[in-house]
Image (cartoon, rainbow, N blue to C red):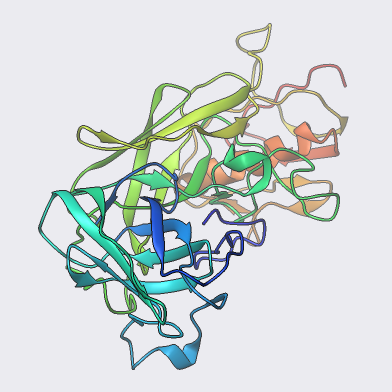
Length: 355
């Protein structure tokens, strides 16, 4: 159930192998639908692997819903977890993807599949209060987490991961990112798992994230769709490379190896330069900036390649991380950069290395 390069916010099914239907359904494993690690929790996308699970292959469609209620059966295929009906998103002979129902029970609970061939034997699975996990792109066996840049919602992934026609970005320290996961527990206000999510709601429990082993600032963590949670974070100061991401709720951690590609910038050899004024242009390898004197509504002009970074040409402090990120992107691609700023030099300091 890894999310593919189209980055749809519903859960994309991964069909299992076909099988004969002489026998009834048989479950081989039950895993978190994002991490593919054993176990589940309420409101968590869950993958059931087995044989003879269904005689058809499809995902839910609009006609399967009753109002805002999620379907508990597709083509006669249903699932129970601890005796309670799960919400069925995808069916195939080898895999069924369901959303685990609300149930306060924890510990070892039975999972069963019923179809036209009969009902499977109970498969025991560990059910916890939460089962944190991040969705990952299907490419490279799910090594990279599904991430978007908060500034423009571009896909954050290594160049070429989705072929030559899809642009991607690497993350930078200080940049704001959007992650997607499941299994993060209850929200406030409470969201009934069996109904479509109408309004995003933050999690009740504190969600923490580390990137490259360093704590990342979590700006928001909450449910935005059926079993789908969004986590907004700021990349900490980590070096260039693939930085491992760990998602946690208290002692419960995401048990998967997912990463984000990071491009850090080397510190300048000259630590401090006087503020620059006017305009400079040319291909650059390195840019630094500072905002200690930045004030609200301060008039300025700031552009990359002649394109204004903000429509009004007024830079405001709360928007600065995104503003800086766009400047870094141009440098990373060795674009012809033109930076203009006011004569007082209070917008930012710019240092150009190897023009």
